[in-house]
Length: 81
Image 1 (cartoon, rainbow, N blue to C red):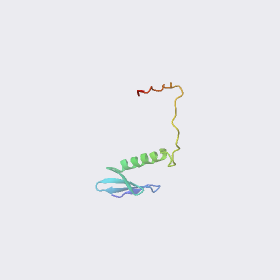
Image 2: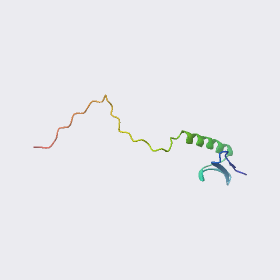
Image 3: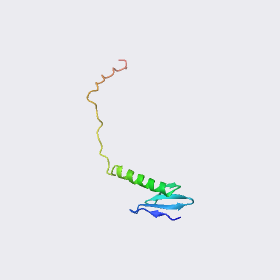
Image 4: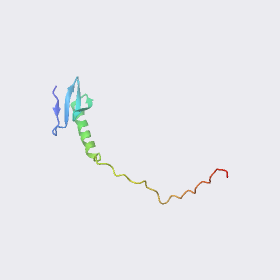
């Protein structure tokens, strides 16, 4: 049993007992029973990395207020004078 490294060099698949371990950037991702499952998982993982937003900090926004919402009248105070 021999493992393999992906073409881009980011993923490695190595034997782990009778199973296969998928490694990405020196971190274990998952363990599978067949090489076909490993290849499918790697493809899905690559697709999720492409669709994730960039690591740029998010812009803070002020909360949106709906224009059509009626204003609630202020409550009367319950304190006795």
